[in-house]
Amino acid sequence: MTTPLKALILEDLQADAELMLHELRRAGFDPNWKRVQSEGEFLANLAPDVDVILADYHLPMFDATRALELLQQRALDIPFIVVSGTITEESAVECMKRGASDYLLKDRLARLGPAVIRALEDRRVREGKRQVEERYRWVSENIMDAVFLLDLEGHVVFTNRRGEELTGYPEAEQRGRPIWSLLAPEGAAEAQRRLQAVRSGQGVDPSFETEVVRRDGVRVSVESNVTS
Image (cartoon, rainbow, N blue to C red; front, top):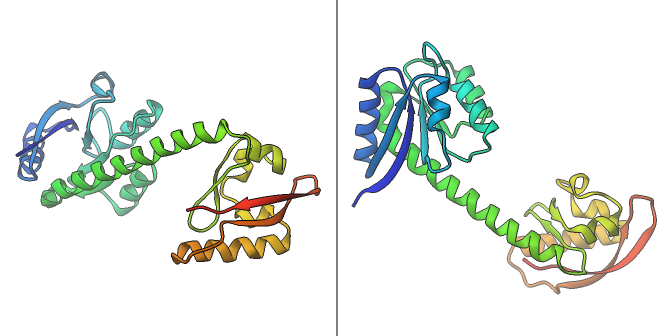
């Protein structure tokens, strides 16, 4: 059974595009594809329903870095894989920094199928996280308590409006900060202990009293509940 795949191929050589398609079919995909060579053609075919973009690093009228820039301007989460005959390590790293999912050489096309599978799975995970965060944001903005969503290291990923009011910090300034940096020293130590217990799978009393140190230095007593 094959998997439908809408592919946008940025490539000036038809023969090279056919080799990519061969590898996609070998990996179990049934590609619906379009080959483009210029910026205008790329933009005309860039759409949310595209599953993957396969791009030669350099074409006579266009290149992968410009294509990545246009993709980001459209704010589309489409896996972008650079497939090139020659590319320096510095150029490959630059493409990855700009948002490329992967890169490979044309004489190593056996990697293409697995690379596409991995990139599609990564996008599925990102989309799942976005949906969870959107639902969480909606719920948290409609309750009266301050809510802080943390990563496993204890850094703030999200806080609701009540969390902003409680601490005096806007969400953007809280994001990435350790939660204990918002607490009084004694509460900070307890928060770290409980986070470690959660990470190791130990049972932990979800409720404890502590103090938040607001931006203006005022301490506010709170009852904290930790859930995983």
